[in-house]
Length: 455
Ligand SMILES: [Zn+2]
Picture (cartoon, rainbow, N blue to C red):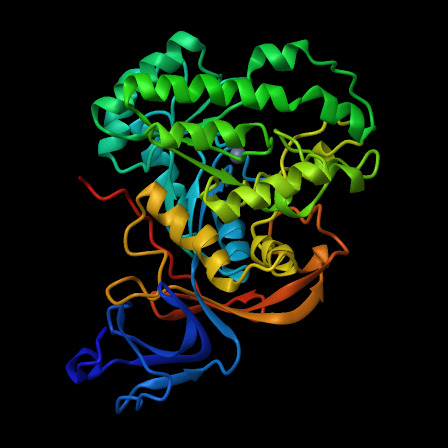
């Protein structure tokens, strides 16, 4: 039995007890002993005696989940820190039950495209991190020689775009550049994560602009994603590169992923809370807080995404938190900044829809903690298991709340979820055994900067 030996728990300072602990082998009553070094010492029966001197946090019926691992966050710091920043992003994340985030390489200045730039980013993040923070590198035209040094400096992988990113300092790769990046990343068995929309299909689509959501949707057709992913998995097979498809929105991508996996291509994929919980049909005209790329699509498309999560075609759910200042969300879908803020709301948003569709807390923990940690190679996270960091999200699953933007800790309180009533109140978050958020408020800053562990 895991840690039932008394010496595993002798002298532990803390025990968390829950009637609904979400463990790798299911949801059951348990007590989790936390060692002085902030790791999980043992998972014990619910009624196990509390070791002498240990504090008991009895959570009653509240669910104890592994802390969420959000591998897709645009912190934008330094350079566009008026959009977000490490201080505000990690506070919002903690309040939402996220204990580890990986920062995307673009929208900050500098972008994370050289090892020197990575050092700048780390200097900015250090001292602001309320949760653990790691970094993705970027693959852009001309920086293929920077990829190995970035890998050796501890980034978790490399992001590239196949179509314009929206910021000029982070251009997309053309087909030749993509091949070069794939070959280089395969040479050290790294991971390439891809914003997959085909520029030709985007250019051929009608670009009307204006306030109508239907016109925006028509400007980012499903085929742009489908064709890009098809090309990507073909190249991944050719080069043997491990690839991850970011923010899958189109149902046409799903059979391509399933087939590629059957053929042994090393491909994983994610989707996002907004694709799973919001639909094109409900977006009011001019409501550009709903604008993101690829876009929120129709209801029937959303059902296909849920089916793909259920059968494992999609691996995980991560936020793609990509905020901006309120003035950039003009009421014109053509010109408004594309990006949805949801760091603090992802868990309740996904849980609300998951429970309605008959999924359990174990599914949510797999999609939002275990799978993202595994595919990005974030070690010691993603499961309540002895030896892992004692990172937890405590959730009252049946309780509801109405989203009030004023209660968000994001720097800009712009949200597509305003006024929604959601199930699942995050009671607290714990990082290495320390309570970092309590009833929606960050209470302690104890995040560390994390790196990919050397092979
Ligand atoms: Zn993104």
